[in-house]
Length: 164
View 1: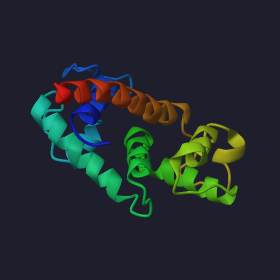
View 2: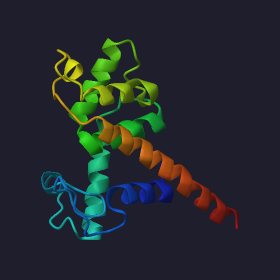
View 3: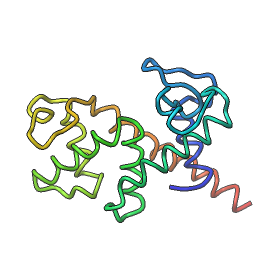
View 4: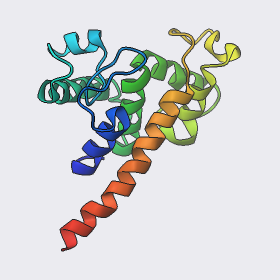
């Protein structure tokens, strides 16, 4: 998932292309950076589109680098997006739970995504393999799914434009 369609899908998901967007959780800008994340990636003004996008890309790269064990490039993007949304620690918790329950910890689809959802259930977030605890798993699950659906939709227009 690279290129223009992917970039549009992420920005649309995060802010509906509004550079001044702010979330209920305190994130802001086109790519919805949290204050601490913005500081970590050298962004002084989260509402400045150029700074926000540059910082967002830098943070996405940091998240992607945490999933070197995931070999499939599409699956790696899904892990990266989930980590961008809820934090890499929660994604690693879901990976450990997936492996514990006989699923492939390096495949998001129908494996780790099932356990990110379960991390909102006490039985799972209190499991001995879980280090980061409760997460509203529906949010990263929907986030990844919605970005990929939007990307596929945008890809149609990019392919049409290229054919003309």
